[in-house]
Image (cartoon, rainbow, N blue to C red):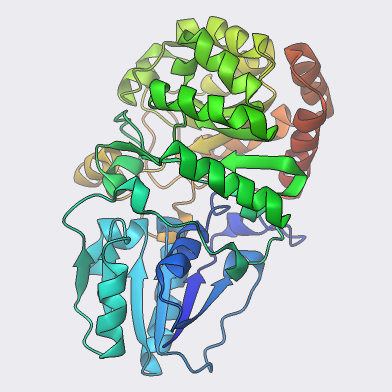
Length: 438
């Protein structure tokens, strides 16, 4: 079969600035699942990946036997349009990813079939059915994927023009926490599963051998690379001889374990993205974030910095306990603790999360235009400020934190390293300079 796999663009105003500067977040991993499907596809089939987030164009006139579209919620509006057009032309179209998994009835209005959740154990059956033109409506594995069964992604199927997308490696799936705003547990289940360490090391060695590992830098695309401390220590120990640099996401709980931090640094860790989410105990309680306390953040940050590891702080505005003072307080917290990087989202009640169910039931959703569910638009009625005040507060705080004065104060004050934090901050400064105000 001739198979086309597509990562749709997003259509919100925030997706592109007036000067055409494409915003990479939250779609910077948009083809990772498609690369995996490519690896799961038997060699007798021809497969092509088109990533609209990179500006690639979909060729509707191509002769395809099957089109697959993977979508997050913010990509779904565009994904549905693509699917509708191919179906109009008589092509079989299947949908997968987070959004079809949590809203299957909606997705089935646009697709011939959908996959729900992980696709490792269903993709082969789907391809056989598609070849016979006998697609079932839903493909859903009755068990979670054994991480030992995951192949290396087909990186040769994508262009590498944004942040070294071929440098991404996944070592685990899921997160052991149950944060109210998070969509991870809905997709991967209440589980935390890790790949065999030897397989991860072999993949990195292969990337180095083939010259695909840009800047000798790996980004582990795990949701929480330290979710299983024993596994993380084994992985970090095995990474040490490779002499790479790496970054990933993890929880603030890593600050409780000096051995874990020591091994992380020894293995080449230069930066960790940490979801602080909020700086008030009340907001953390609403978020069901129980890995640390706002009062303990200062000491935890100092501990991580003492190992020369930079911190990318992730924050959410819009919890019901947030009033108009939250922006200045968060800004001061970031500067006072010298967080090298910071990124701000507005609370987004994604379908499949507790917040979505609660806000929909209580009539607090402003609309269900999925393109605006991009973590930047306010799509619900806040409790203690107007939607526009929340919108403006997020925007203005992002602009302030990326001023040259703030960048210098934070990066120099952290005393971790200068090159990577300065490079990233200047890139983010450019991003926020060009951003349209919503």
